Length: 355
Image (tube, rainbow, N blue to C red; front, side, top):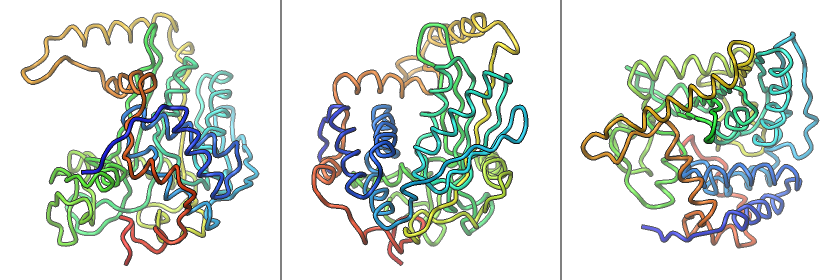
């Protein structure tokens, strides 16, 4: 198993930003990505943190990310709009889209804003938490490339197609729930590879459709809760892809096949201003009461306490931002180096394996 080192948040941010700038990204865009990846690692979501930098840097260096996108907002109605991202780096484009959506939600009470033609945007919890910090309820969904065996099938069709929801509360940080519609996100497999760690046999199947514990042997991921997760991932694809006139299902571009081209991915925000439906302070106090009542429930055997969904991530964030973030040593050494790979991922299949 690989060694882990503790890295202070600012150092990790600076290393990531520097690597992305070496690959060719603008400073402001690289800063957005670095902030996002540090957020993910600090939340314990290592699948969407620094482990992604190597791949991002290669795609940037090869021209698969537009280094100077002219991001525009097309207002399509009083509460709706489309952000045209021109295949800029995902986190920067997604933040621009979120700003438009938050302004519209404050003005109209609700906003539905889609983002067309963007690169991979990372952990969706980052965006809904920012919305909730502005006293908005945030819902975010995005499509991803096909790597999931549909319920009852033998070939990959949908992506992990995550969904996140965040809501403000009176005293603590927002309640944020973020999940892939697979048993685990692809990034969790990637994280297990980086640590040379086995995965549970319920996460994925090999090329023969058999459960596997080897992260290097993954051929298809599995939907969460069988047909229920399968149905949810289909709906996410419809809302974040098809609704925006983008490729869907098995037609979504691969993360690794051709790193010289933009990915043309879609993402959608649905933001709600609680003040248009109830008293804001009462709403936030009610969430605070719910959290307190959940904490008061006696823990079952083998559990420390009842945590609300996403609470462990928040506890990780508070600890790691103060005491340092655990990062795999090989990733840390890569970040400190002058290396920008140019042939590590390109031409690979959906699971970053050379074909």
